[in-house]
Image (tube, rainbow, N blue to C red):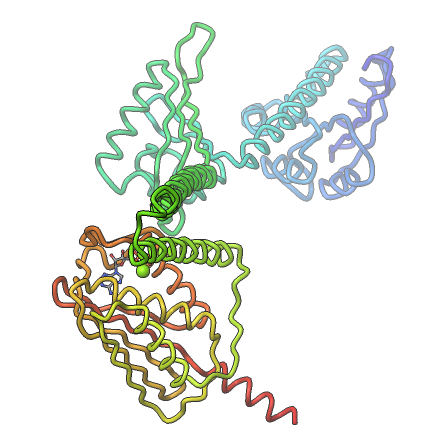
Length: 511
Ligand code: ATP
Ligand code: MG
C-alpha cells in the first residue's frame, strides 16, 4: 500500500474543505494519491460504476442528500468501498452513529492532521479488506450450509434455533421466520406428540452436557409422508471443552432403508426358494423310489421263482411293474410340464375342437382306468360344441381334476362332470362325493407340493392342481372350488372362448 497508488473518492460540497483535504494529501510524502472529487452524492454514486475506488471520504451533508441517509444510499450503491465520514466539529454525534452502521471511521473537519489522515485512510482500507474477506467466507459457508442435502440447524444449549437451513425447513415443514428463536421441539415434525417432544428435549439436554447423540427416527415430513431420518445432535465446544452451541443434523435415509428392506425380502425369498427346491428334490426322489422298489421286488421274484410261479401270479407281478412304470412316467410328465411353464416355454396355442366329443372321449378313458368302483356321469349343454381352445392344456386340466375326484373318493361313487358352453365361456364342473378338503387347506392347494391334511395314505405329490392352475391362467380363465369334509368337492373351471371369436373375425375381415 505504501508504493501503490490509492484511489480516493472525495464527496464534499464545500470547495474550501475539499481543497484543504487535497492539500493535506499533497503534503503527505511517499504515497501517490489519486483523488476524484464530487460535490453531489448522485455524481459520486455514478462514478463508482465507472471507476474503482479504494476508499471514499464522504461528507454527510450534501446538496442532494442529508445526514445518515447519505451513508445509507452510498452503501447501498457501493457496499464494497470503505467509507470514512467527514463531519463538522458539532456533528460528531452523527459521525459516531455512522460508524455504528456502515462507516469504517470518521474525521472531524478542521482537526485533520496529515498523519491522522494517512492513518485513518490506511486503517479504513485494511478493515474494509478484512470485512470483505469475512463476508466472502461467510458467503461460502452459508452456501454450503444452505446447499447441502443434509438438514442442519444451529441451536443454543437450551434448544432454541439460531440458524436453520433450507433442507431442514423442507423436511420439517416450516418457514424460516417461524423457526428462528423457537425451540426445535415446537416445529411441526416434532410437536405431533408430547412423548416425541419430551424425547427430543432429553436428547438436547444430553448433547448440551457434551455428548454426541445419534438415532434413526421415523418422522412425518412434507404432506405428512413418513420418512426415515438419520438424526444427530452434536455439541460445539469452546477451547476449554465446554459445549457452547448444538449442531443438529438430519439426513433422509428412507431410500436406503427401503433398499435394505428389499434386500432382506429378497434374501427371505431366496431362502424359501432354496427350501422349496430341496423339498422338491426329496419329494421327487421319494416318489420315484416307491415304484422303483416295487419294480425291483417284482423283477427279483420273477427271476428267482420263475418256475414255481403260476401264470396268474406272474401276470400279477407284470401288472404291478406296469402300474409302477405308469406312475413314474406320470410324475416325470408333471415335472417336465412344471419345468417348461417355469421357464416360460409353455404357450397358449388354440386349435379348433369339438368340445363335446373331446370331453366324452376323455370321460371314457378315465372311466376305463378307474377300477369299476367309480362312475363318471358326463353331460354337455350349450349352443355350440365347436370351440377353439388349447387341447393339450385342456386335457391336463380335466385329466387332473377327474383323477383327483376318483382318487379322493376311496369309497367309490358317482362323479358328475358337467360342461356348459354359453356366452363365449366354457364352464366345466367336476363334482365328487369324496373326502372333501378342510377349509384351512383350500387356499394353498394351487401351490406346488401343497396337499390337504386329510389325505391319509392316498398317494400324491401335490403337483396336479398347480399344473391345472397354470393351464387355466394361460387360457385367462378362472378356477374355484367348493368343498366340505366328508361330503365332497366341486371344482369349477371357466375358460373364455372369445379368443376364438377374435381370431375368426380377423379371418373374415382379411378375406
Ligand atoms: P398329484 O401331483 O399326483 O396330483 P395330489 O393329488 O396330491 O398329487 P394335487 O392334484 O395338486 O396333488 O392336489 C392337491 C391336494 O388337494 C391333494 O393332495 C388333496 O389334498 C386335495 N384335493 C385335490 N382334489 C381333491 C378332491 N377332489 N377331493 C379332496 N381333496 C382333493
Ligand atoms: Mg392330483
